[in-house]
Length: 320
Ligand SMILES: Nc1nc2c([nH]c(=O)n2[C@@H]2O[C@H](COP(=O)(O)OP(=O)(O)OP(=O)(O)O)[C@@H](O)[C@H]2O)c(=O)[nH]1
Ligand SMILES: [Mg+2]
Image 1 (cartoon, protein in one colour):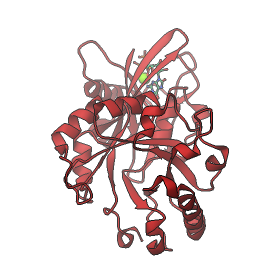
Image 2 (cartoon, helix red, strand yellow; image 1 turned 90 degrees about the vertical axis):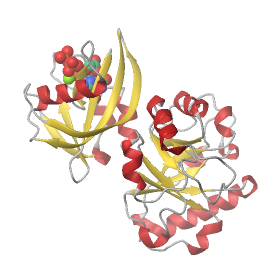
Image 3 (spheres, rainbow, N blue to C red; image 1 turned 180 degrees about the horizontal axis):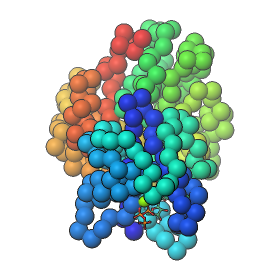
Image 4 (cartoon, rainbow, N blue to C red; image 1 turned 30 degrees about the vertical axis):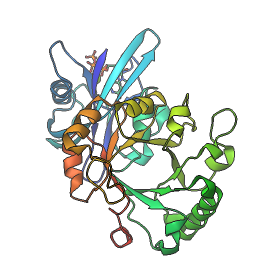
């Protein structure tokens, strides 16, 4: 069963949820509004129709977030999840379903159908992902805070520096204190226990929001190596790697290089057209990486991307 699902956002980033009627499948749970595709409909057409029928709003702007396949007892669903960030009208529960606007951080997975857990986790990511090298860069790291809608990925370049990197991470998080932004760390083979899962010690790091897999490590994973509450990111360069990302239930993929970059002058950039076709086929949300400038966020969105990521993109001044 193919379902169009709308994550409807208001201007302050709150999301609209509705309660399913008791007699429906998964009745009494909260959901993102939407419904089944009718024969001949595209996902977008179905999304617009369902949101008109259920909420009396007109979709003005929407973009894909992710696709989720899930098997309920006796029912297999494919949820095609779109973010609706502009619409006309005020949502009303046309089918008398209760509605609520909630900040994404307050969505409680236990109140939603099982398949929604992935959506909720992926909604904790912002449009922009700043990449900072540690420990090399920590000397100049601002004691002041990055703006909160930037998720920082603290990157380690050299395998043999991994423990120095973790020390630098701890110091940095401590320096930022309570106002620390969401932090994603590089995962190294060194932090995987014998069972292929991330060591307990790393998972307990205060302020940790997720872990990121890059290089050859992705090929070696047979399942998602991190616990449910943490985000998992991966670095990808082609369709094969995006498929591996989907296999380990990654929450986002960085696809690079989209544009030419000074760090990899010898690598041919993908360009936006190729980025779009890869992003469209990916069930995992894709961020554009490589030569990104702040203004590229709109381009990334219009090419099916979840957002942009960059190393120099968010320098310390703009993050203050
Ligand atoms: N709309 C929606 N459906 C979801 C979500 N999560 C989830 O597992 N589903 C499943 O997707 C399936 C189809 O959704 P639906 O019941 O809204 O379809 P519909 O609006 O066409 O319903 P109808 O048959 O009452 O007209 C249901 O089995 C539902 O349990 C969600 O967040 N939103
Ligand atoms: Mg519905």
